Length: 351
View 1 (cartoon, rainbow, N blue to C red):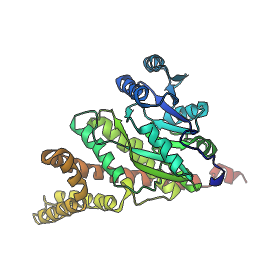
View 2: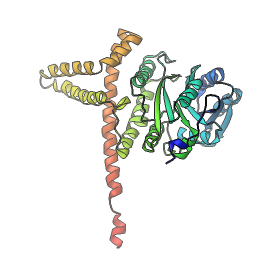
View 3: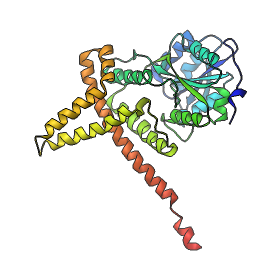
View 4: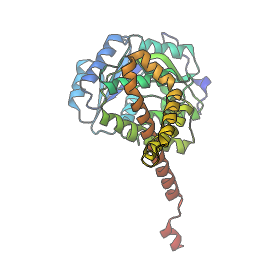
């Protein structure tokens, strides 16, 4: 492993930053992302856009804003696009952002300051702000919940985040960058964070480093992303790496809430056979409200009573499909582990 003492020492004026953005059919949100960079990133900041496949519109937008553009012939996912961008970058620090976020005025200077003030820091991540761009309920709920989760997490991070994450370029290249086997916007950033921690590098969650999420969530896009692109592959990663951290989405209260939600579902079904289950369901509901009271207090403060009332069933539904994904992912992992450990029958019989 590269010893942390061998990392180059940067000063506020010496450290150069390269912003790397993978994009595929980014549309208007991508233009808003580029606009925020041209408005707020210092002139010395290198901005690299990697157009991940046949997407002439995004390529043209990047050209119009005068940033460095790399165009890939085939779409292979943001992991590969980020790796290519990082290898082409000249900055000491790579600041990854997604094509559907807008940076704040202070973002780049905050990244530089964080690395300058802590010479042992290898990587850092930020958070979505508390003012999502889209006004529909699911966009507000999803992005505010993400903000709450990061703002209440430990500052000593165990994972990376590709939407707003910075890393020393030499460290990124040394550990091999993102795992390109993830061909969708998935958990390639979480997996990188695991490898960084296992290699002894220091990661930090900078809660004042905020970006605005521009994406509009609807029911289908939210469930597809959270179930298939996050929860299922994350479950496989947890089992493979034996890493179940008590932080972010994996806290003890969240795990307990998953159990309680399934008990509540069972009690509600049981009412059809015995009315006494209604009292059990009421007790479980009250317990869920108490355990998750800090979350609901946050939403109450930010969006008021009626919004919070709509949050509660969605939040419980989140525990329901999250638990289902963990169960399915666990079975898949155990089956694949069992299958891969079986001796090759044809080879064995030929001996």
